[in-house]
Image (tube, rainbow, N blue to C red; front, side):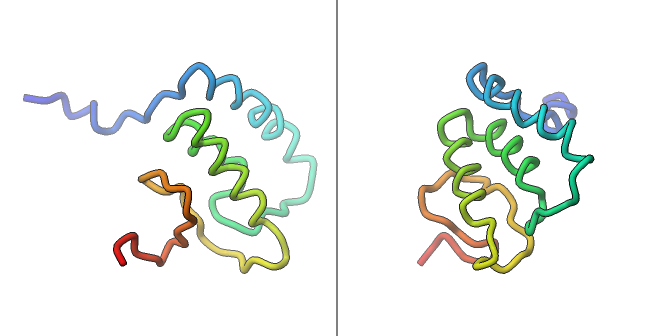
Length: 99
């Protein structure tokens, strides 16, 4: 029988992703001193941490950079979770992956 605690543990970042997480952790320490500006939920830094942890350094960086490029007045704000399955194509939260 499987341990019930195994399914609830979060994925651990790879060593390369861990190095990329350091500047994000520093930013999160100083960000309370600035007004909140993120247009999305979760915030861009939380998105980057989750993307790097879940998808690794290369794919997680790609997702985080793609998210930062969407953060502007030309994009409507809203909920934008990290995708469960990596794809180079952007899938808005309401879009289906099957066409």
